[in-house]
Length: 278
Image 1 (spheres, helix red, strand yellow):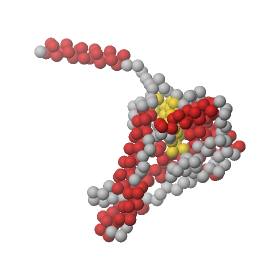
Image 2: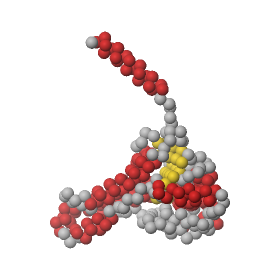
Image 3: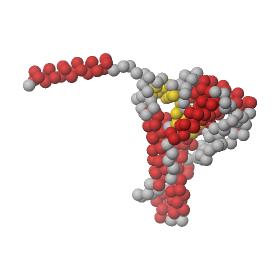
């Protein structure tokens, strides 16, 4: 019995060593997360006024910004649109590459950034990986109405509400109107700007609920669930031969997406500040 076990152990060790040698040394894919603001052509809550988008000054800034991203030679660029919209963006990129569509024609960050970078990097697609999923804002509003005059509920929530109200909501300290495009993008992708996302989902949302009511938790889990599906859509397009990805999504997506990418053994997250120079 001992001899057979020893022989089996040697065989197992030999197979393990062979397997490790046979495994190719595949480097992690570098991922540049570009949190963006929406340029005003969307119903998204995060849209931003961008009145001078088509001005010569702004268009020159876009040229510089996209040149810097294109120098990364990305293998794939992932954008905030659902897969059903893929044919639209395929044709848009083709028209742009054929010089039948200029940069003063489309008020959209996917076009102004992702399509430009894809064209400069010689890519045939910007890949749509979004997953639409409504957040339960209505449940938060219903909870407020239900409990605002309920003394028992207010008492049960008092301790945490006091803690959350003592946490001042982070204020935006840099404005697009007075910033270059590059410096504004560096700001909205900074830990300072990301603090408002942490406040929304880890300070204020948990205050909605008491006892077995977890209304605020539904908000948090719904947001993380949507972004987990976005991350999975990106995984489904991943190729071991790829070296660099750019992910262009609304900046509020960056907190959960960064969490997923940083905890995956397949990717290395590259900070935008190491790529873009103001």
